[in-house]
Amino acid sequence: MAELEIGAVARLVGLKPHTLRYYENIGLIRDIRRDAAGKRIYTETDLKWLEVVNRLRATGMPISKMAEYARLRQLGDSTAPARKKILQDHLGTIEREIETLMEVRDYVAGKIAIYNEMEARGSGAGKQVREGFEETGRGGRSCR
Image (cartoon, rainbow, N blue to C red):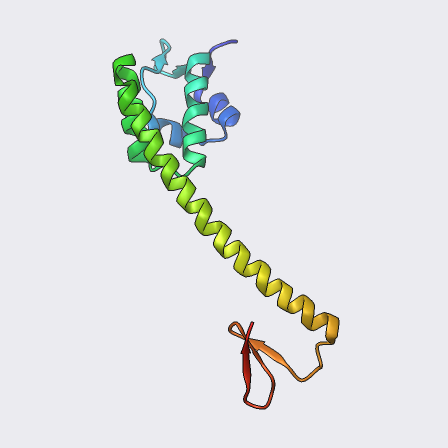
């Protein structure tokens, strides 16, 4: 693979050149070579690391944690336990977010089921659904 300039890399990894420069400034990506004119030159190794960065970013990992992970990675294999801990902690965060999303997904699915029931019996049956309660139109409520 040929070495690439920042614009080509930005297109390949789905980031803007400004973002790549920012990542370099905060230490998230390091040791990017420069050509004689001072332009950044990215290698295949750099692209592989940017794939890792993009995946961590997609999980919602804060940039500060990604930068710490990158700093530790740069220090070598002796930091593997610390890097593992960062990923374990982040996995816990992801799992909690998934649990929350599943709970709200179930709630929304339940609301859709209520509307499906209403449609099945005819929406003009004198009942309205408000804020999780089915109103009978006579002041009575049943929780739905």
